Image (tube, rainbow, N blue to C red):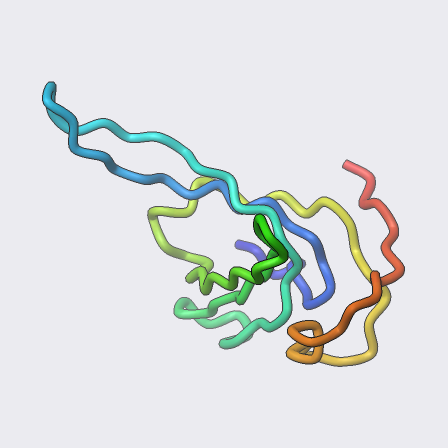
Length: 105
């Protein structure tokens, strides 16, 4: 379903969350935007991506998303950085910006 997602892409992951309120259960969508630093599993059903963003106070947040999970509403690619590696774990300590090009929608 999401075979075109590669490391170096900045993506918006729309995740469905269920919350319990006094009136019952409510479902909402939360957006997590960050750069894909790793993709595991290839095209298998259990394939995952690891997305990293810099949150408030320069704290790095990483989340792992299964690509075929029912809790993922959609994944929008925003831009693609030119990278030469399959795993971008060095971005955890890297202080410079990557060269990125916008993706035409």
